[in-house]
Image (cartoon, rainbow, N blue to C red):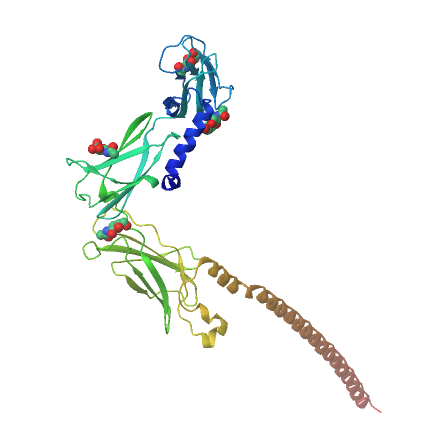
Amino acid sequence: MPGLLSCPGSLTVICFLSWSLCLSGAQSWTNEVSDVQYGRLDSNVTLACGKSQINIPAVWHLNNSSALPWHQVTSNGSLVLLHVTLSAQGDYSCYDNRGLLLHAVKLRLGHPPGLLSISCRLPNHTYISCSWAESVNTSLAVQYNASFRGTGQEWQPCLMDTVHQNCYVDHPSFWQTIHTLRITATNVLGSETTFARFKLDKLLKPDPPESVLVKEVEGHPKKLNISWNFPFSWQRYDAFPLMFHIRYRPHGSLYWSEVYTEESQIVIFDALAGHLHQVQLRARDEVDSESQWSDWTHLLFARPWEDYVTSEPPEDNFLDNFFYTNTETETSTAKTHSPAPQDDGNLGLVILLVLFAVVIIATVLSLICVLWVRQRRREHVTKQELTSVVKMKSMPI
Ligand SMILES: *[C@@H]1O[C@H](CO)[C@@H](O)[C@H](O)[C@H]1NC(C)=O
Ligand SMILES: *[C@@H]1O[C@H](CO)[C@@H](O)[C@H](O)[C@H]1NC(C)=O
Ligand SMILES: *[C@@H]1O[C@H](CO)[C@@H](O)[C@H](O)[C@H]1NC(C)=O
Ligand SMILES: *[C@@H]1O[C@H](CO)[C@@H](O)[C@H](O)[C@H]1NC(C)=O
């Protein structure tokens, strides 16, 4: 008995039984209380009052209350709920005019499934995963059954992960041209089958390269060393080579420089010395030109090697290698911008100095001018004196 009580299932059953007994007044309880009836939302739903034909007037309750949604009661005691909404769900019970319970039923409402919108991805040649979304909110539990085949092949199951509405196929026959995925969605009100057709090589899209590192090359202010790993989901890199597309630019520039390679490491030689650079990578199947490029990796930031001893204050040394997250970039741009107001101050000082020099030069020039004029005048006077002396000398005495 203790074992029975500790089991949540048995507890639920016991609770349910006692609740049902209370409901029926422990008098005329029947097994029918556990009946569940399903109905479509926005339609008319008919609830019959027991199995037998009764011609006495029946009284209906919802959740033990006589308040019912919009309805009619037919001559045989059936309850017709008109244009039902979700609020009409609940436990209905039907009594005869002496208060005797005749029938109880639980009503659940919803929609049958609609078509699904399906999308599939292929991170490598041997794995397809597809996910889907419902076009109709059915408000009832839906079961899915998915299968997959290449043209002219047998259907094989697409293995389910029902929680995430996702299924996958291991080792599809990649070289078949057209593939079909078939998903049947079923609930108590109906079922709907959706087909999706696609070409696997057009769906092939690797995951982005991983563990990307951008480092300075010591002694080389224009070089950057970029290295990365194949995506984890692309394990057969010996059989299926990937092409990598690398792009980089000085931080703030509009134009990318681009490099394509099959290696997983390159050194670029034309970095802009002393500048922070942005670097990004993506990958694609090297052979299959119909396949897709992966998404780009996150932006990485790095600065080429600099001779800090002569050019930079030592506290900037921590910027020399590794990459930065965006927030760190903000701080480094803030740093490069901060000397700007200081430059403005210097410019003002220079203008003041020039003005001052001009004033001094003007003053000196006008002084020289005044002195020169005065000198000329004095010379003129002595000349006049001289001529008058000469005149006087030449005068006959
Ligand atoms: C529901 O019942 C009402 C009243 O009997 C009727 O006018 C209406 O057309 C019915 N609606 C549907 C969808 O059957
Ligand atoms: C009746 O009870 C159900 C739960 O059992 C609830 O979802 C529903 O809203 C209730 N209906 C009314 C009209 O109280
Ligand atoms: C899914 O569909 C396949 C093929 O129609 C069928 O053989 C299989 O029994 C179905 N599975 C379920 C769980 O309905
Ligand atoms: C293909 O991708 C799937 C999913 O990421 C992975 O589990 C599987 O190991 C990959 N297979 C190969 C050969 O890389």
